[in-house]
Amino acid sequence: MADEMEVDEPVSPQGGNLVSGGAGAVDNNFGNAASNSSAKIADMQTHTKATAVRSIEGWIVLVTNVHEEADEEAIHDKFGEFGEIKNLHLNLDRRSGYVKGYALIEYPTLEEARAAIDGANDTKLLDQTIQVDFAFVRPPPGKGANNARGGGGIGGRSGPSRGARSGRSRSRSPGAGAAAGAKDEVL
Image 1 (spheres, rainbow, N blue to C red):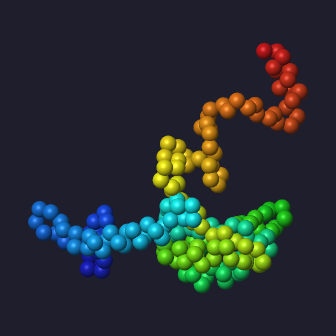
Image 2: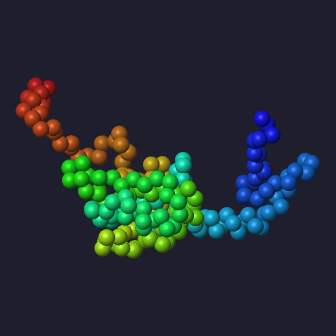
């Protein structure tokens, strides 16, 4: 059974192959690895110079400004030419049944995701210009270094942490005004 198992070569942190030789290991691809890693880092840069992060199964691309009448077939036709699509999410509004305006597309490799971003960003899909970029990113160097949550951006918050009071009062639930007012007067 052990004969059927494939074993990868040991790899240095820079990406080159290690050759064992006594007390230390020698990296025989150091120059090659440095140029490959800088090219890979350039492929991982978003339009805002943030670094893309791989999800558990692949590279997720976020497509925004998707026409409300777009369907999975139209998106698959547009983005299938850049590589194999592992997964495609096109979320619909429950009330109207139309597309919410964005799509998430998963590619197995960074090269396919980068090709989709470069090839489809600022192009038309059903007479509407779409924007395409990586869905998961680390902030650019120097931005968000002190804020572990990332702050700002899509869905993020800048400012005080979640538990801190920001000085503004919260609105009351409908119908709770009379009961809450009576409670405040008693105290």
